[in-house]
Image 1: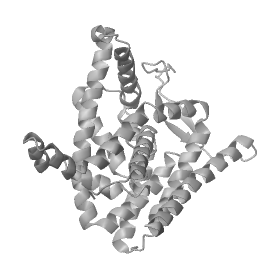
Image 2 (image 1 turned 30 degrees about the horizontal axis):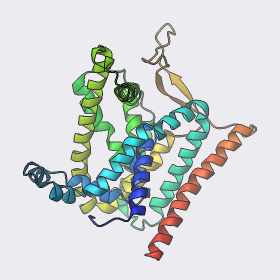
Image 3 (image 1 turned 180 degrees about the vertical axis):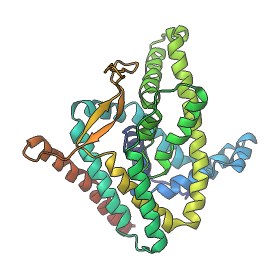
Image 4 (image 1 turned 90 degrees about the vertical axis):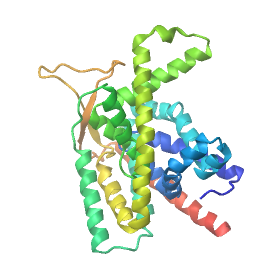
Length: 339
């Protein structure tokens, strides 16, 4: 796993991190799918697994180079750097298009997930009773999650920590959308919109030499929430990676079959043709988040009317999404031949 990387490999690793970060922020899309399709899922899991007691001993004893090599530092640093950059760049662009061209964004993601099912399943030749059962269980759980109703927002710090641990599963479990889990937990807006915006605004002010946020109680509280969420995410990432590493080592075929089923079940979350259901009170009162936007409860899905041009354009974006995955498959095969 820990081998020298060319400049081109490092560049593509940052790009993969950008894609993972963007995917993690979109409800219904899993960053783990990017890792799986990108061919670095197992390295990602095993690298995270290396953040253990031995790693901390190396760190505490001041053996920083040994620590960096042991945890596959070059790989993790570049990937996480790409994810962080994504949250303040690509994910902002995605937010814009989700408002302006929502149908086309969902259509492209739907196509990409369809393509990823093909990508993962095409070389899987281990369909037996156990793997088939695992796929059915994954499919059932994926479908069930897509139809759950969200809870209300909760800023209790212990709950925020648990949200971090649970939501990060989208990075390690292909098909499970961490951002959609946050919607179900009621804290998507608080943790992936308000908190990220607060951090962005704080950095912008610090860059200009403005320290007024220090007296802004609401801003400081939001930053505290983000810090606890980040700590929970890091804890969940390392903990889950140890579990997944064991599972991948001992039950690889069953795990892959479950993932195929789970991703297929998650298609319901990213179905392009859906009406957003917003949170309202008993008397029809509309609930707004801290940015003045209506709070999403869930989605009402429907079949498209193919007499409209808009829906044909959406079909094009589904095909485009599938094409992106087929192109990745083609690129991967040619790279293997070249090496």
